[in-house]
Image 1 (cartoon, rainbow, N blue to C red):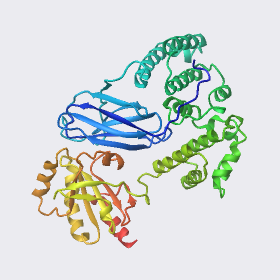
Image 2: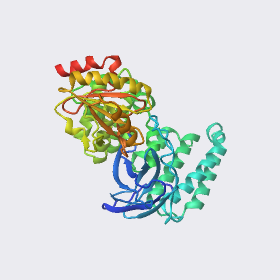
Image 3: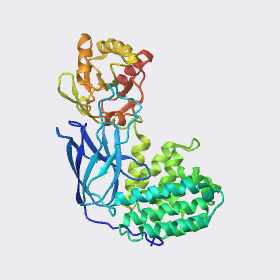
Image 4: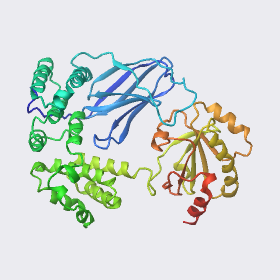
Length: 458
């Protein structure tokens, strides 16, 4: 059943409905998101909805392919596979989302326990869940036999068992999922050598961009391919190639020497993955790497590879000076909406804080002094990550000299994720055009004023 099955059904975009119950989350936002691709895992929001007063929710999203997706409430989340045009009736186990009085800046979230009420044994999530359970048990029991002893009979026997259990499955996503999960065991046991594996699973096969196990296998097989794995590339100096006027074309030309990468689409995707790895390699120039990825985005004939390149640029440049600061719209202490975009025209000092953070309170007193000096030239915005709006309001109203802008995070926990707030306080300096000037910025007690004077001179 599994050998040679790599086709994947493509359909026109269709509406998928995700509804159900999430008791304990009444009034909270439930969010649906998905990785933009399975190399960068740059997460993209798809849709959101409020959980109503009875604990029910409903989200509609348009899909053109089977996709891995994430359901999240606050920092808690679960994942599931969504197929176009299907309806999912979810039961998210009750929990006390407001049990903690403080928001953990390290995002130690819990898994949402979730079941699909209208699922049966043939539904994709049920198939994958059953298969993964069998696979994990087999691997746990037989890892030494597979890895140390290279016992191929163990793998052959397991493959027969899987075929008997799932041979009647017709879901093309699941068939490919199992194929590449088993391929990882072939690699573990060295059932085939590396070139044989590439020929069997990559060379003349379609690239299954949205299949989790295909891309997992791809990422593992081509890890450090340009610098370590490939006999061709590790013997050559890539620096002159990346310094050329058109590093994208030059690198692809060099890569044609690899007979395992005859497939143009695959070759380019391997190149992109390699460039992302080179970005964090100290001996390579990050601007040169970004230039090559940008050229790939502009020149590639493959839309899926263009998406990967775009996501790589977003990932590698996130919160870097000169990039747009993540946008937000939050409620101020005056109960009015404040958006970051509305503050353009002046630099912005952004501070993430909580009332229970002693360091935050110390820095706040120093912000008061800076505000008096620079209030006509710079916006000061403090984003409270307290659970309760009223707690922030009570504290700020006690401080008669705290006259700058205070906003509350509310349900918009994604703001903390987008700004990678891992501790409080966190300061960010944003220029008058809404671009990151410094991240993280110095605290008022440690040189922020010097940065303010500098940004005003620019």
